Image (tube, rainbow, N blue to C red; front, side, top):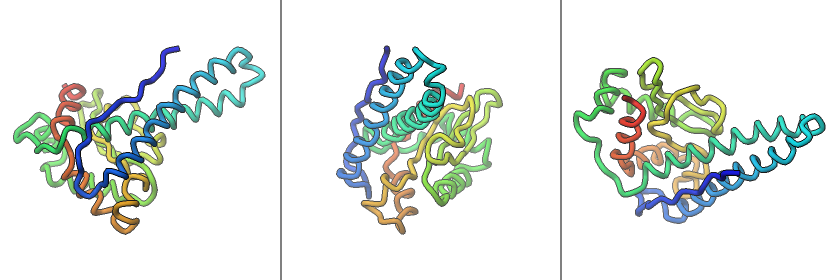
Length: 198
C-alpha cells in the first residue's frame, strides 16, 4: 500500500514562536502522518471481513478524516513559515482577488484575524472555491469539522493550543496571530493561490 510521507520544512528562527515549540509541533505533525498510514493499513486488514468489523471500520474511517486533515493542514501551515518571511507582492493576483472579494486587503486581514480568535481549538483557513471562483474564509473545528467541500487551501493558521500556549500563554492568543503574519512567507501563499486560483 502506498504510504503518506512526512515532509521536511526549512523553518528559520521565528518571531515569538520558539524553536522548541516548532520542534514539538513538527513531532505532532509526524504523528498525523504515522496514524493516517496506520489507519489505512488497519482498514485494509479489517475490510477482509467487513461484515464482522462493520462498526470498527466505520469508526476507523471517521478517524482517518481527522488524521488526514491534521496532516495536510499542518503541511500548509509549516510550508507557509518555511524559507523565511517575505512580503506580499504588491499588485499580485492574490492581492487583487482579496481586494475584489473583501474591498480591501486590510478588511480581509482584520476579518481573517477575528476568525482566528474564535473560542475553541481549530484552524482559520483562507480557501479558494474553483466552482464559484471566490476566496472564502472559514473556521474549522478541530481539523475535520467545517472544511469547505471542493475548496483549495491557500492559507492555514493553526489555532490549537499546542501551537502557541508554551510561548504566549492562553492570554497571548492575539499576539500569536500577529506574529504568525509577521513570520509568513507570502511567496508560498501566492504560489498556493496561483496553483489553485486560476
